[in-house]
Amino acid sequence: MDSLKEEVLSRRTFAIISHPDAGKTTLTEKLLLFGGAIRDAGTVKGKKTGKYATSDWMEIEKQRGISVTSSVMQFDYQGFQVNILDTPGHQDFSEDTYRTLMAVDSAVMIVDAAKGIEAQTIKLFKVCRMRGIPIFTFINKLDRQGKPPLELLAELEEVLGIESFPMNWPIGMGKEFFGIYDRYYHRIEQFRADGEDRYLPLNEEGELMKEHPIQQSSLYDQMLEEVLLLDEAGNEFSKERVQNGTLTPVFFGSALTNFGVQTFLETYLQFAPAPQPRQSDVGEIDPTGDVFSGFVFKIQANMNPAHRDRIAFVRICSGKFERGMNVTLSRTGKSMKLSQSTQFLADDRSTVNEAVSGDIIGLYDTGTYQIGDTLVGGKDLFHFEKLPQFTPELFMKVSAKNVMKQKSFHKGVQQLVQEGAIQLYKTVRTEEYILGAVGQLQFEVFEHRMNKEYHSEVRMEPMGSKIALWIKNEKDVDESLSTSRNLLVKDRYDRLLFLFENDFASRWFQEKNPNIELYNLME
Ligand code: GDP
Image 1 (cartoon, helix red, strand yellow):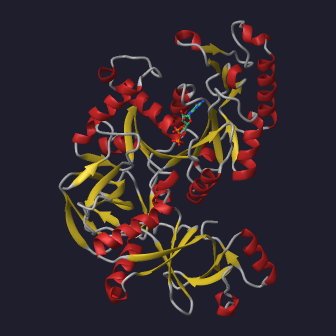
Image 2: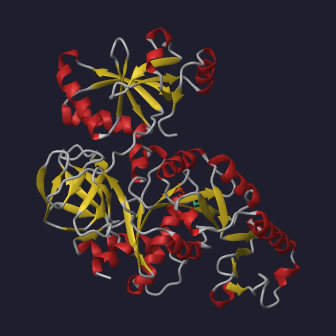
């Protein structure tokens, strides 16, 4: 195998999707420490995994110039090069969070065992589903009492509609947590044991090879019963179904106590796909092809008023990036030199200035790039598939504070909308501007950039959250149907949609107007 191909096939690029507080930061930290500790024992002086003090962690951050909040984290593990892309939540939730999922080859979904499937997880899951990418589930916080594991599986299937295959199964929970019965590695992994005692091997019948006091416990019997149930009535494991995203392997563990994390990582790496081919207007682009290509999936604005520059994040889809190389922006046909690039790598490779398919590079941007732009290294230009539009949930009326400055206002709005920072709608007759976003942060960035970059002060009037549903049979709809509870607006492509006040309003509308077909962009 040639070396480029080998490099590409070693990449595993994923994002962690979860609801705030499920344990994403904690799991990410543990994964990074694994990568770091195992590759680079010199840095962390052979300390046992799971026993780092915060200060050690901060020291690693400092030395490597990374933090768990950085956008892309990279580490080597067992010959794989792992790229973890951050998907901001909380107040930072925005369309960029969704778009990040366009740049990964698989996703890890963390579920808090006590809370089950939560709202933000559902949203992110739907986006992964749309792309048909593999989803690996880590059910976290087993060191605390949570919902019964069978109930959690049922939730996966009922709430998310995905079938599951538990790779391991907990024995007890919370104070009585003994460990996990590993159906994949045929062993029991003990929660409160280190070193050789940690693993108890199983025989072919799935029973402990050596006697152990846990066998006297009712928790053990319960686990055996449940595993039998899974064997007989559960889904069959299928690598193919994992890889097409219709079956999620489920792992139980506790990120905080670093339990089950290594097992998860190692199994994940076996089944997670290497960089996949991407669709373009000239057909599929082979990730192991020689010619460089990539697309911009996220543009991070600098909120510091002293710096107008932004960073455009590019997912490499073929070939190799080298600092100083020439590429062409397919949208404009303009050629440019990629010299001012910054890589978001978590290890020494950041100084090598090379990256291949599956990797992410950050390019300093002074207004050149738009979300979805294709960059091509060769002479034959093409465009990757358009990134999807995501259904906004929050809306604001917006206008220029100073009526004398309409020109800069309109210019700013148009450019920020085009760049993908925010979505724009107009009321049908009066053409009033309404902004749509998936997270509050987008409005704040918009306001800030209008002010700083376009010298336009804006008046923003919150409309709250709305349910946006597009209309299939537009000719059957006219403005007389528009009310404050179901406002008729058009999007930037002049497609009509209703902004409903809530679920109730949309159902009521449908009952009154059964002939009008409504649809959600993301379903
Ligand atoms: P994020 O918001 O998803 O990034 O969640 P964090 O990683 O910040 O975790 C949220 C809280 O849950 C923190 O207080 C963590 O210490 C705690 N936490 C994370 N993992 C575990 C776990 O396995 N067990 C317990 N008991 N707490 C955990």
